[in-house]
Image (cartoon, rainbow, N blue to C red; front, side, top):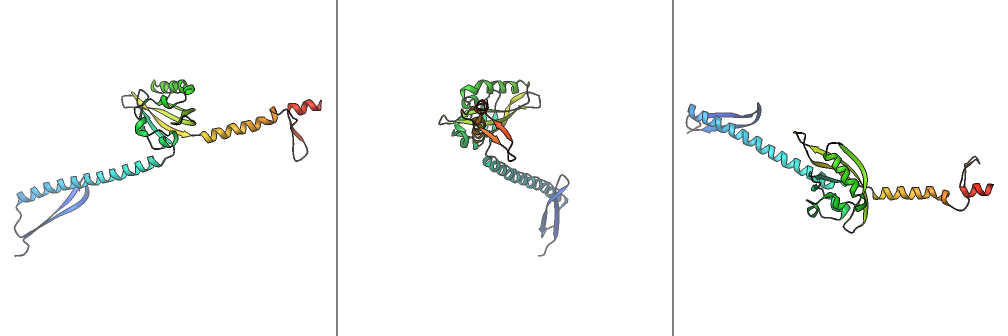
Length: 219
């Protein structure tokens, strides 16, 4: 009534041991049964590797999705006609438009009307392979028709046959930076355009700047 036969088959795939299949029986194992079990072992090894690959892929996709959704910059894909085919959630945060409602629409619809021709030319240069990459600043309109200054990095998508299948890139909201630069320029220009005399004197007592009004008064 005890064990009569025992067989163990390594589960090997691509020269890597992925497991072990063991069989205990009270009856003898014929060579035919052994061959059949060896075939089963190979099938189990293949299934185990496939399962592990699928689980790894699920984890990778989950991590990828998490990263994409947490990035503050817009990540986008455009088809050859310039229509959105992919947008991450940052698109809604910057423009107020829903991602699903924007997909399939031309990217030019989101651009300020005074900047559309520039954006159209950039896209045509990319898709015609006359330029491989662009970084430029432009204005987008939000759902509430407010202006957002953005910096766009975009390059063409080229397949193995060297055909352009669209473009991809990022959109960064630089509105605050742009407004800060304007304020700095205004402050820098203030002494020059001020109708009153403006002088700048160094710590050593040296005159380092005098605007037009001050120079006229000195005459």
